[in-house]
Amino acid sequence: MTLTAANPIVELYPWEYERGFQIGIARFTANWNRPDAPHYDRSRMEEDRKAQAAAALCELAVARFTNQYFHGHIWHWSERSKYRHLADVGSDIEVRRIRTADGVPIRKTDAGKIVWAARPADAEYRTIELLGYVPADEVIPLLDNKTWMYFPLRHLRPPVSE
View: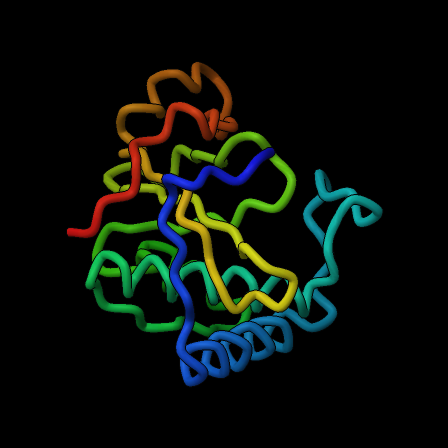
């Protein structure tokens, strides 16, 4: 993957950076001792404490860019069924942090939502690159019998603030 100069870079304010890490570590501890999903390959994954913070910072950056509400959700994994319908940002934006893939995961459960792809643009996660978005309802028909797929980053719509 290469960085594209055309993609917006959100420079986080110090308080946003701190809050993103607070949310990330709280999510990490809320999932303490939870087993990984069967399809996870731990050897290819980033440490959860870093991954959770990076994901929260990406959500925060998309929220600021789109001028949408960011609630910074944190719940214990056992309460997922209560809150799984809530979007990461605003009422209909799901944010996926991209680390190594050339696509953004789109799931059947994303129906009715807009999926944004973002990634930290520096090693300290102080800047977030917004890669683009796609309405999930445009991708879900391509899933056939699968529950999810990677949608190529090159086919995302360019980031525009709302």
